[in-house]
Length: 130
Image 1: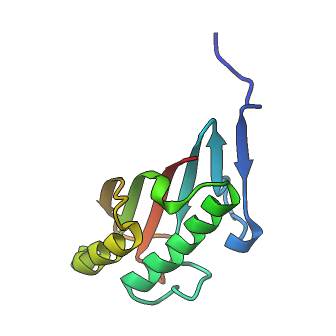
Image 2: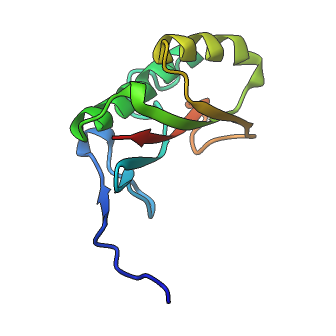
């Protein structure tokens, strides 16, 4: 039997993050876990800037979601990072160490040819415990 009751899922968008133009939401909450769609620095002060600025701007958005849902960046379980330039790997790693501190999550790094805008070099998906 296929379970079709989606009442146990919370789907949410945050106007402060810019409303999605496609068929997705910023996150879905399932039980004690948040599943975040890919976020970028697009529409922030980090847009069009270097890797560390884009990472900082993106994690600020992730932190806003965490705070609104009663959790913290330290509860990130897994991230998937999509980057357009592996030449920025050292800056990427340094920035991530600064964000994570002692709470390093599981992680995947995927090089992509491009993202939806030439002004963003990284997109970050996250799974976060509540």
